[in-house]
Image 1 (cartoon, one colour):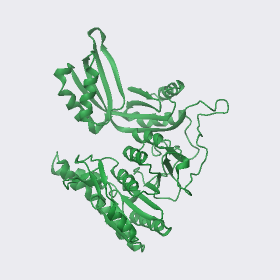
Image 2 (tube, rainbow, N blue to C red; image 1 turned 180 degrees about the horizontal axis):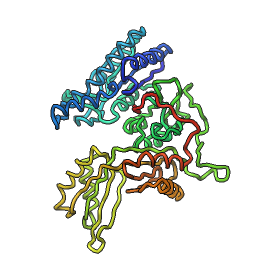
Image 3 (spheres, rainbow, N blue to C red; image 1 turned 120 degrees about the vertical axis):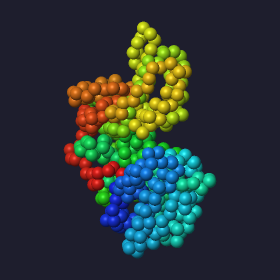
Image 4 (cartoon, one colour; image 1 turned 90 degrees about the vertical axis):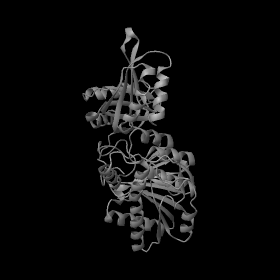
Length: 441
């Protein structure tokens, strides 16, 4: 019997009506002859509300206790969905992350899955039940409760799909798959029907919010096929796999021309870069190490300090501020939530590295263009810069790789920049995309 893992985000289980709608879909999947494991996020804004509540109690909550608190949100969702499924005559059992067998590291707030023993889920499936798992959580060897950090429910679903050898892992949200841009910001964005793991990784890593980076990486490592789609319609979504040929039989995508690209023309169809999409994120900060001596080893020491404090350092730049004195500035873009931690780590090395200060500008955002061959074609960055200049947008930092170009701009210009770039690369569709709930999860 085919096994399907379905993950539903917070917008999909935001209230009682939403939970009943999800239950109806899950029951229909079971009635169609599938074994079903469901992973749920917390309802709506529950996680944010719990964080806010904790900060009313203390400005610096213990991360262990915060994990204990936050996991309650997903457990509420899983229990309510099990109750709803019983109303549709579909037997169901809810499980915490621990009961589902997810063992993790002891990094509270950002734990990594180390082992999965899905025997209790397998037993539940063998009894004809739907197994419903609270996402985002696990437990340590010392029996502490942990959370998996950003995208934790996506990661839970993919990990369970790998452990149970599922035919497909379906990731449900409030939009019909992954788009060439965020349809809330770029209404003319087009749905992408298929992405390889590397292409999905690029989009997820640089701002696409529908699918989290860790989940894509886990899926690629274990060969889990993903179908990203909306819980509000029956429309097909975006498939993510090694290739189209790797999709399950009977689950074909709606389009077979894998090389369709607005950048290709009859006059020059072969070597134009294949632009997959435009991703953006506004939760960025620009950190600048001011007046550091331009000596061998200084940059290495900066990166070493940052690597101990944060996990993501993306766009970076170097500016000669006082060439006659041999001084330079190093600037980095990183998630806002990591900025103060990174600044503190660098200031601890100020005497050793001999810089003047570390400044943090939280009023920035990042836009990334992902595709194939973007660096090897000089017209791509030129076209991007022209689009931003025409829109009156100043670029603070800029970086390229073979598959991506990223720019850092002022936060209030991020959405205008995303729309300008999307249009400049011919990605606009003829109709507006439909967003069913508005949160993106």
